[in-house]
Length: 212
Image 1 (cartoon, helix red, strand yellow):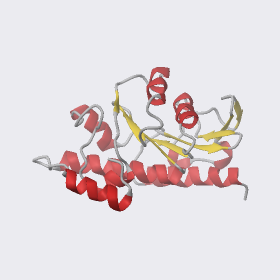
Image 2 (tube, one colour):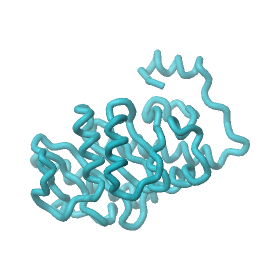
Image 3 (spheres, one colour):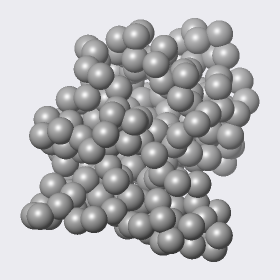
Image 4 (cartoon, one colour):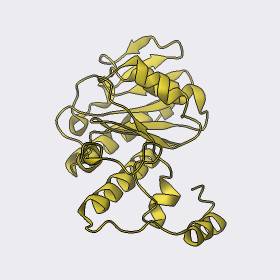
């Protein structure tokens, strides 16, 4: 199997897993992967639980639609991440319930939507800033993400959902899942739990290279 076909299968597997477990619903969300000659990205308004590998859109390095179904309207956002962070191999965007609810209820801080609550959140996710509401596919969002793409592993789009990037599609989905579960813990905890203290964060940095 060629690398491109393997990436098409990986996108479908990740999309199906996220959909079946409720991390995204309906036709919301999108996934992309880096190729040597461009990118693969899920089609616009498609259900991530029912993706066809052959229908996934291919876009060349100039951003031109080459094959497959019409690419997602968030293509410009994905391209900004890839252009500014050469270590990124995959980007995942969902409309995950607890993270969207967090933006409605009020995030911890605009530069960090959640405090450091669990060790795996610190190690696998890190800082996630809030991007103020813009319509889906807005070029203004892509411009803001461009300024952050090489500083963090993802952003939270207000009222829409997380966009997370990593070295592969699968690793991006794992980080996104960790972020969503941390939001769920935060929202269900009353009173709100205290963040990990500086000594705990220092230990995670020294033992695992965490960058919080």
